[in-house]
Image (tube, rainbow, N blue to C red; front, side, top):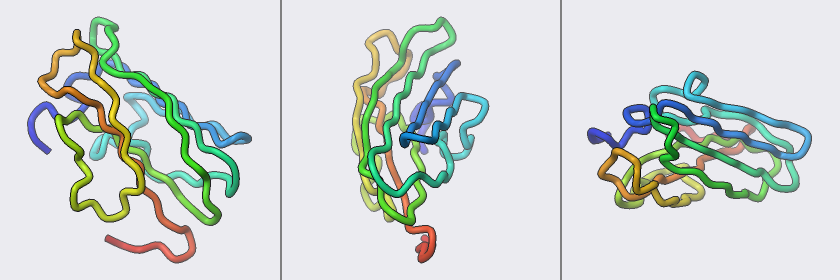
Length: 131
């Protein structure tokens, strides 16, 4: 990862809420996987919609990026969500990346990148592939 691509270099506060109906998960700057700056793996219900809402702010409380997106749930599945600052899609050559979303970076953010990329990965629980 190149310098300044990591959100942990510019983010003072992070709030990510994931909901699948009956279950809610909350991740912040202290509970993220610090290697990937993401949620790590988590299981969900097998039907319906997974909703993800996020907000990242700098040390002055100014918004870096925020947004909401939804995913269709699958049976026997785990999910993982990572966040990247980049000027281009970071998933080229990524095995296990299922979806990618781009959100604009606030003009006040102190980073040269123009987008926050949300990368969604996953795999079946019973027959997981190892990459």
